[in-house]
Image (cartoon, rainbow, N blue to C red; front, side, top):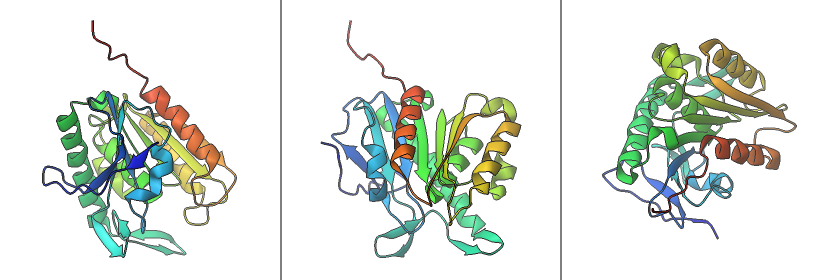
Length: 232
């Protein structure tokens, strides 16, 4: 049975995190899952479950504490004009996550080609921010009920560097927190950038429905196909 480890706070890593247990001794791939604003790293256990056993699944905790058990990657206020973010915090978290993923890859000898970052809501936002600005760090990114920050545009990598990426946009048609137009904008933006991606919309509000989770796992299996580690 899959469970989450206690919180790991190690100075070798830029963020505190939990990992799915049992963790593979010699992982062939890495999945980093990012929680939403006001949540924490335990929220995405349903995404961690069902991932192949040879994949190291890491769930970092956002660096900003909003309350007891509530964390974020950046502060945001939802207004009639749309979400208003603290852009400096989003930028700091983007840089920290890029460093953190590199630290995990070095520690476990996993290549960027075998690394995927994904998340829910604000975690999906950060996944896109990492991948589109540092496409040499990951091979794929998942934005589940999230968006791509307009503020990201100045640091998006050159088109030729984005060619190796594959994105996943999953969103509820009736999302009341981040309306579906954000998924439609993300889909169009990725088209213009030449980023290969899949976009799917679902009935429902702001959340991770069963169909969305199943589709995520199917997409992940395509991005990180099983490898045969058997010796000669």
